[in-house]
Length: 639
Image (cartoon, rainbow, N blue to C red):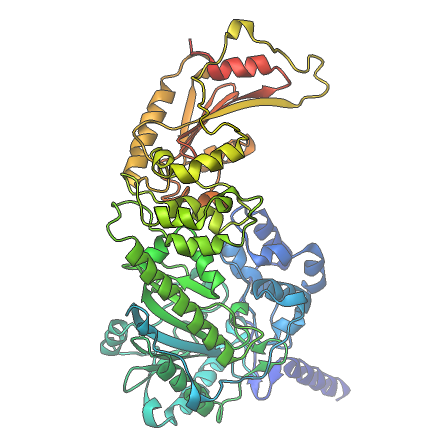
């Protein structure tokens, strides 16, 4: 009897460890060990996730044997990063993961949400005074908004996420939520469509309305989001089709309010009213530190995402479109959500901040940010009327001049010589092929530590002579404004006045000489079309392939480069990248990586970059200090 009593007590203890209220948790997502997952994540060069950054050896050692009270593990949380190198964030195995694995998740959350000082805290929920909202209709700004949508996610307290939900528990959760939805009335009254056993007629109708969610996201799949698909999942839609609830898609509940046009007030009011009604029958998990708990750390806090689908083709074509959006607190996505492309210049623009502010603050930030972007799109459309095809759209000169005021007038030549008189003289003026002064200064306007403009073509030096001449003389310390550069001469290579700068080899590691060249008849990156860049690459690579002797070598186009070639060029320190914001904002990376490549000789002492910044960067180099040999190689005609 003693043994039986002991056995019963053990069973009860085990059950109590996995029971919350009346819910039995069954961990049905099996993953590799945390140590093995860490090794895979760390060794993947393409993985730049926050998981990789913060999944340290100390974290692994601390948590590899720890489980939440629902049976979840940190390995389940990071599994998606091991299987999806481009996934930025982990996913919580259940609503207790954030506190159980606190040292890991706090670092990730503070980094992603840019928490000041790293102290994570969230205010009480506040949707504001719904009766006195003052947002203007976003279509006031150019009639560019196709539709407006506000959504939020909720986790029902006591239930886990995908990795820690049994099939039976998920069905129970679905029943609990769908019952609450069936009790809604008025404008919220509608129909629930469970995915299990859905008729073909309903399925096609939901696809036609763009309401049906699917199981085709590899990040969500590896996080356990599709376990037992489609069991326990469904969609609720009101009669007007402007209020929608997804059950057990990613979060337990995704509540969505939407409609055509830009009336943010109507959409926001509908959402706030709905969540107020649902909160009467469903208890949602909330933390004073994280706000409302969600599957993905990106949605913690308000979980609110207010967005518009807006037509911003010119704004989106700017090389720093993403950075411009972020400056205004906006995140830009394709029309079908994260990691998708835009269709017809239409983008999904939404608030970026969710943690550390209230719902009314979040939607206010979204309204202000989207309004600023729409106003900029209207300006771009007006300023770029009549521009030649293929020329990069550019902001008005006066707009960029205002941004340029953040640069030092003593150190920044671009700002120093951009006087009111120069702005008045050249505003709206274009070269034959469409380059403007605005094109030339935008790289400095957005990067105030940069000092010089970038030209769009050779003609800029004559068209904008009153701006560029004094700037060039100042930068190059030329005292005589009438100064002219002498004809090129490389000297008598048989009688060079220099030789080996370090015959002993004790001091100089390596020597390098390089020159840049522009091919006549071709434009610079800002106004060069994709087809012209390909033609230019063909001209240059053809010439390089004709080199003989010590200059003979191989051309490696960046487009469709093999992984083997890429790794070798990285190892040789020959590969140039598209990571310079100054060059990016000047238009230097348009159509990347098309029309660009690297040529080097067999000895790896002669290198040519094609269409990196200039049309050609020609480089001669070698170990040691033999400057004469390096210089001769750069200049001498191949034999």
